[in-house]
Image 1 (cartoon, rainbow, N blue to C red):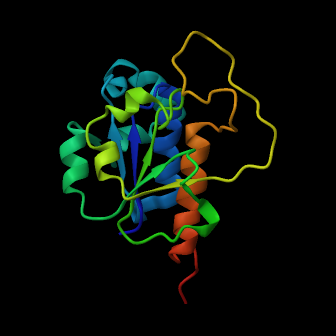
Image 2 (image 1 turned 45 degrees about the vertical axis):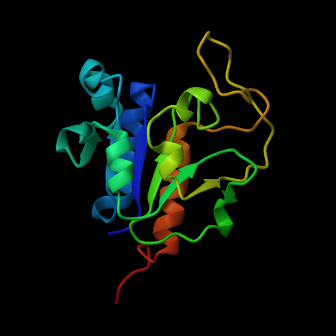
Length: 182
């Protein structure tokens, strides 16, 4: 099995639906999507998630993680978090391995937020971090009273679904899943 993906507390139901669709359409059966959903968006916002997932959420090809600390502790592959930190490896330099698990943080807070440091198991079990180099200008999200990561407005950022799509594609390409078999 290829590289797997774990979303950690995605805030927007639209983003969660888009991620379900992205992994399903882009990766097919080569990857598994795990969802840590402590706010129970898959129940409370299921209709909105269905819209953006084009109802792929109903196929149940994802797995909901109830206890993230136990899940990460028992995961057999490397745990790689997407990050904006200085020590994160730029995506073009990173070498994926089969069964890597890529973690994606909440789109409003990211992995730089002190609150996510308290998510049990994330920092203790992460083997490394990757980041997507960006060349554009920063366009900070508007302040809508939400809790955002400490560098909000200072660093380039992208929508979490965009990050999932870029990383998933890079992993598929690097591991040879996109090469046509004769």
